[in-house]
Image (cartoon, rainbow, N blue to C red; front, side, top):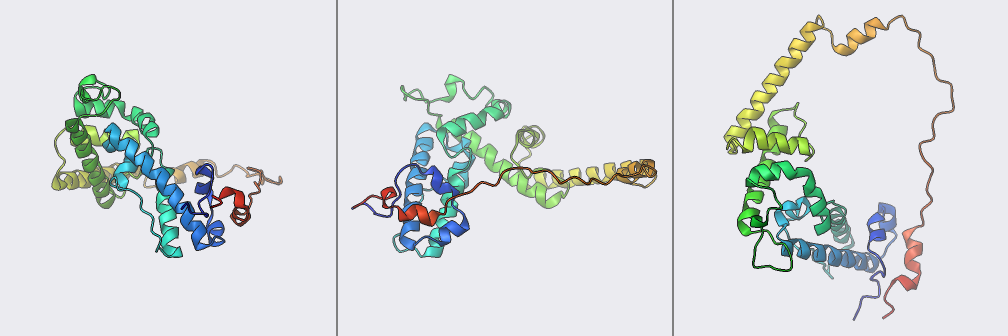
Length: 264
């Protein structure tokens, strides 16, 4: 029997609930929402896995490919946690196969360096699958090894080098890791810790030299000194309106309309 509290229609509007919206739901309503989102997430996980793109999807790697499971005995607080977990997955750029394929185009050069050939080279795909492209296990293993090492490197950099800018997984950081660490085979923990500390000391030395060149004054201080006699005009306008306030409907009203639930 279908859950009468399971919402109908697109799952996308269910990803926009605020904490206030959720607090106004009953436990059964929230469970219906979580179950619907879990089903959507699990379909995406299945497609990614069947394509052999697991290691190319950061969203898939984050959850270790585990399916989202609902629980009829979960408390309201547990359901709120489940809602946030599945929402975080579904809103990630690489939670779908299409999103993953678009995302990896940014890392075309690093992947080519890792594999020794372009990612779309036919030899990277299993010939046993005629109707779709599925990456070989050996290729997936190489890619998994790279990203596992990359994640370790980021943690070590953040811990040992306060000046490091590796908070985001962007092309610049991935290329830096591939060129300076991975391609040189220096991916064990001691090598990465040593490199992070060396980079930190080098950054500190450069910063000291730069400050000494400004007679011990920071660049901002030097700039301010040259502008000391410039009179500052106070802005007396009414300010800038950055956007219009958008009125949103309360989710409690939405759920009061029986039409969005299965009526049996």
